[in-house]
Image (cartoon, rainbow, N blue to C red; front, side):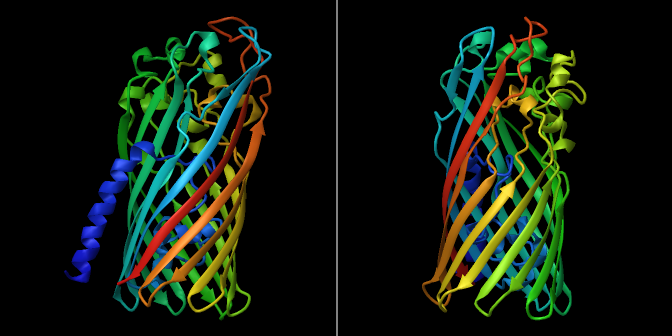
Length: 427
């Protein structure tokens, strides 16, 4: 079997694996986007705008593909979030805490491929889980308001990203990638909000729905001397088709786009063996009405699902990523990293976000790659995201239905752990 045929066969198998895994894929680190893409990059806290470490680089900065050669990366992440919420000071019942962990472990595959077309042109393909959110409450936090059955949501997003990188001058490259997106969503146990919707039949308990869409990413990477490389990358908003089964829940008749984001980064080669990476990323959640619009619109009389209607009230976030890469021996590379994000949920918006408590902030990561032969290597990384709690600030509307829910506050809590493994093959 030729190398190209082998790569194509692997690609098809990876695509099918990702499609099957999408129903259990969930991320909730930087809001609901992952802290990085690719096992090697994740080991250094997801930093990589100015230095590509594996072929998932197209998801961060496609310009970095120019330096990766002919290569294949296949990996999997085991992701374990711990999420809960509480309701306090509410007129409809006593203070109570709810565990959202009926589903505790998620498996997130990744696939990357790059090929050199000419000395100044490379192409690549990445397939990865872009983001997601899952809560699974066996005891429904909204039961005191009339909800029945278990409650929660399950959002999964998968990107297929073909990319091209062009070296237009010595040490300078540009990249472009097309983001082909697939997402699916389910909401359970929140039918009490149907009475607040323009489309009551399409708010809750309609099973999984899916949508597709597209966007693009462009990037630049440039070396300045032997020790400093800079990078910049911008991803457009990914325009998605509407979730028809949840057209009464999300603003604009079920529209749920993937937010625009952009990043800048620097790689500093401090010694021949040690490289320092620093990235800054901005995620524009507020430009997606279903995510960024305030739930206060609902309590002011604007129905769910309406044009520019109520959402989860997430604010834009800034992520700082710092990573180090150390070439310990000719065969062993060690990594470590730290990142911090301004969690996106204001204290006034916690009532709806019982369903989506994406509040973790700090990320601590370690990683390593070992070359087992001239062409094969294995990588591993681990991450810990410490517990963060958000205490509501008058987040439950006072008064009685239909205008109020008895006042008080919803409080949110989340922590996370992850471990990832990958195999790299030079082709």
